[in-house]
Image 1 (cartoon, one colour):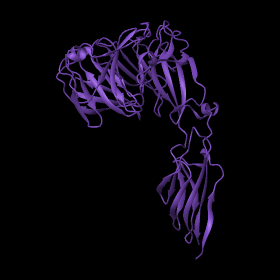
Image 2 (spheres, rainbow, N blue to C red; image 1 turned 45 degrees about the vertical axis):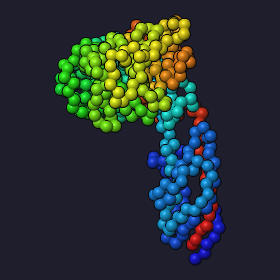
Image 3 (tube, rainbow, N blue to C red; image 1 turned 90 degrees about the horizontal axis):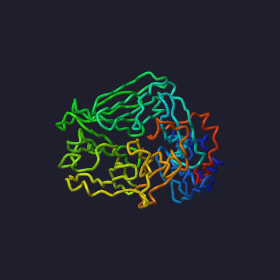
Image 4 (cartoon, one colour; image 1 turned 180 degrees about the vertical axis):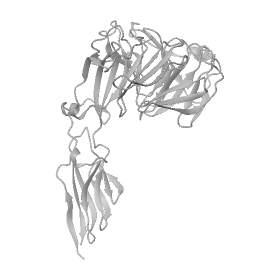
Length: 430
C-alpha cells in the first residue's frame, strides 16, 4: 500500500444543475481499496452576495461548512462518498404579491420576486385587471383580504369581516368551485400568510385551524372562555422571524377578557384582568400584531386615518385598565393622513406593516409601509410602486406568496450567479 500526496479533487464550476433535488453534488467516490485524508479545501464562490456555502459531507456526515478555505484532517474510507450539501440549491422562487381586489372577478397586484427569500435580484412587477378565473368573490368591503396560489391545488381564499358581527371565509378552487365556506357571526379568522387560517369557535369552545392547501378543518385546542360571542370579536396573530406562528390573540367580544394561544407550549392564557375595551382603545377597527427584529412584540390598531395606537405586549403579563393609556401614538410629525381609511385591511410582514397610502401622503394607492424597527418619521416608507387599476373595491391590501411557473422564471432576468468551485488536496492511499 502506497501513500501519495495528491490532488484528491478539483472541480469545474458547479452550478445549480450539478446539484440534485436534495442540494447534493458528488465529488469523490472511493473504491474498496482506496482511501484519502483530506488536508486542505480551497473554495471559490461565484456570487459574493448569493453564496452556496455547502457542507463537506463525508460518508453521510456533514463535517465542515465551506464558508471559505479550510484546513484540517478528514478521513475518507474505502467505498465512501464525498459530497457537497447545500441549502442554496435548488433555488426557491417565490413572489411576494401584494393584492387588492378591484371587482368580483379581478384583482391588482404589486409583486416582489424573491430567490431563497431574498428580494432585489430582478424587476418588481405591477399588474392590473388580473382575473381570478371566476366572479365568486362578491363581498365589497374594504376590510377584505384575498389570497391566491395556495398550495399544490392553487386554491384561492377570501376573508371578509365588517369588523363586528359578520365574518366570512371562502376557500375556492381556481375555477371558483367552493372548497369550504364559513359565515359564522362573531368568529373572525386570521391567516398566517402561508398555509393556515385560525379562528376561535365560541359555539364549540375550540380554537380551530383550516389547512388552506387541503380545505381540512382541525382542532388546535379545546378552550372555553365562557362567552357566546358578541360585539367586536377579534382574532389576530404574530409570526416568528422564520415564518412560523408564535401566538394567536383573541377576544369573543369587547366585553370579554383578551386571551392568547402559545404555539410553543400549546396552551391558552388570559392577558387582561378587565374587558378588552377597558384595557385597550378602539374595538371598532382591525387589530394587528408584529414581532420586531429584536423579538419585541407590539399590538396596534388605527385610531383614525392619521394615527395608530401601538401597545407593547409581553407574554405572561396581565394588563389592567391602566394599559389603555400606555400606548405609543404613531403619526407623521405634520399629522397628515396616511391611511385611505383606518378600516382597510393591513398586511404585516416581519417588522413592517404594508398598506395602500392616501393621496395626502404619497400618490394615491402607493404601496407604503411602516417599519416598526425604526422611530419617528423614519418609520414611514414607500415602495414607490402604485397599485394600478384600483376601483372602489380597493383600499385593503393582503399578501399572497405565489410560486411562479418555470416558464415565468426563465423569462425573467435574475441578477445572480451562484456557483461553487472546490479543490481538495491531501494524502491518498491505495
